[in-house]
Amino acid sequence: MTPIKELLDAYQARRAEWRRDTFADGTAGRVLDAADALIAALQIQAYTPTEDTDDRLEQVVISLYGVDLSIRGRTEDLFVHVDSSDRDQDDAIRYPLVVGVNNASEDIYHS
Image (cartoon, rainbow, N blue to C red):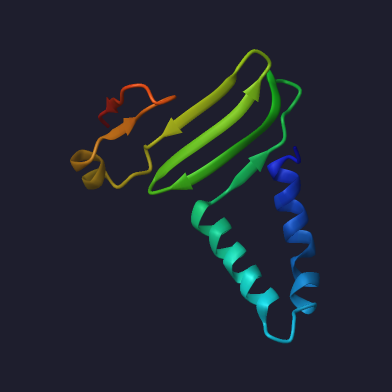
């Protein structure tokens, strides 16, 4: 599987080239606009593992609704971190963070 960081970097590097090669009906431009909007909405970031960690896979972070979901493959496990500290405080008070893993029961986390 191609690392997300590599895919994002390739997309950014070739985007201008693809924009120039638009089809007469503008399809390529609309596809690029949709891809740009999706990447921006999800705030996708990817980080290559460094030697001073136990990571064996890149770390991928997706941010949505004030919640960061970070996933990284470590030597012994797959680590998932959820950070909701960026949520609007009023929203966080009204709506606690509820997480379910592998279809198990939901756990409620209050800020």
